[in-house]
Amino acid sequence: MFIAVMNMAKNTPLSSLSDRAGGQAEVQNNAFIAHVITT
Image (cartoon, rainbow, N blue to C red; front, side, top):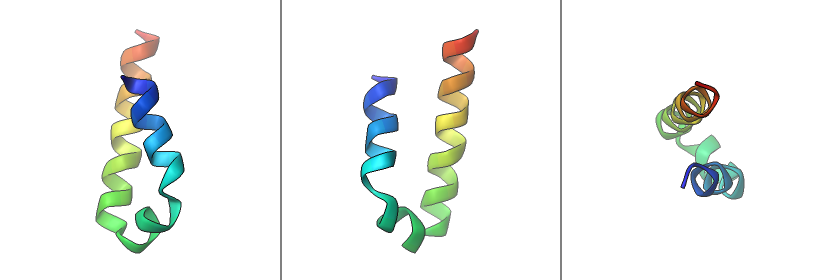
């Protein structure tokens, strides 16, 4: 499931750039997911 989330983030670069709040939330979410994976 976390892989799907990361792939979604990679597949929507322009929409993330046009929506800064959404992009920042996406980055924080990916960082949280990476933290969960490594612990």
